[in-house]
Length: 221
Ligand SMILES: C[S@@+](CC[C@H](N)C(=O)[O-])C[C@H]1O[C@@H](n2cnc3c(N)ncnc32)[C@H](O)[C@@H]1O
Image 1 (cartoon, rainbow, N blue to C red):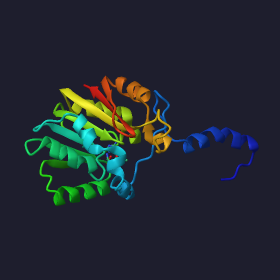
Image 2 (tube, protein in one colour):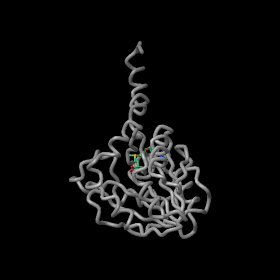
Image 3 (cartoon, rainbow, N blue to C red):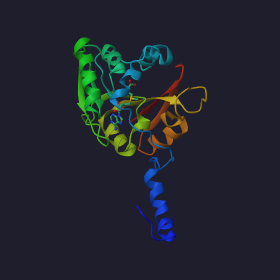
């Protein structure tokens, strides 16, 4: 691109800057993180993950019961899907969603090799979780919410999918804790989560502590 006059360059500078800046949440100004590609699945399956995140403890804290209908939104390779599947048992159901067909292929392979007969995968979109309305006891988002490119539309869809007594649960790396070794845009503070979710009509219930690096934020419909 050539600029014939210096004034043309100054005119265009704000537009060029906004094209390069990451999108932010309109209420909190939080920079929205990029989506982890399917090449990142090896990180999701890293051997240290059990020690760093204690996912079995996390799922125990959710107090799931056999027969419940739940969703693992942004399920990735299905690390948590498998734990949810076992927690709700054969009489329950798990919808495992992702926007990336390549992630769902990895997840389908996990479902096949581990015989997770109660899991159904869903290819969703950046603005629509594609879940059945008024039907879920719990929706879990592990390390996902901060990647939503359209968080407000997604929250409206997720809220609609919950039963009246349903819970929406976010597991996010603690932004308040500088010792948690994760890039800032991939962490969330309790204050930002509350501001963004309460604005979409979700009622804050509690923060569950006890995990090494993450907080568990529980909201009601
Ligand atoms: C960091 S990975 C976490 C995967 C999984 N929850 C876990 O903890 O193992 C984030 C995942 O969220 C997915 N994702 C991002 N935006 C999404 C959206 N709007 N709806 C559903 N999935 C989304 C990405 O494709 C990616 O697989």
